[in-house]
Length: 130
Image (tube, rainbow, N blue to C red; front, side, top):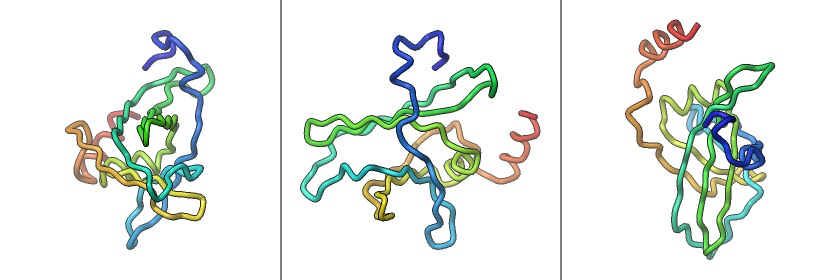
């Protein structure tokens, strides 16, 4: 979502870090969590929404908000992922939320037809963008 379309810019300030871990030798997109997920908490709903922010210095920045409804508590994550995170997401279409102790708290698939599926397609896409 462009900055001029945002009603409240504060809602899109970064709240969590994205990192890449390797699971069985494959890079995995992870979000470092403050450990909101207790043993008895039930996840009711998850939404993921991407947006673009225009920055004077850095140009367009891709980010996303992730909302999770857990036992009537709405958790909101705002992430500006790095290139490695985006590349991993393109190929795995999966995001993990992990605790500071590196325990997997939640994982989910991102179903979309917007991602390229092969490395050669990804290389062509990168050439087009540069």
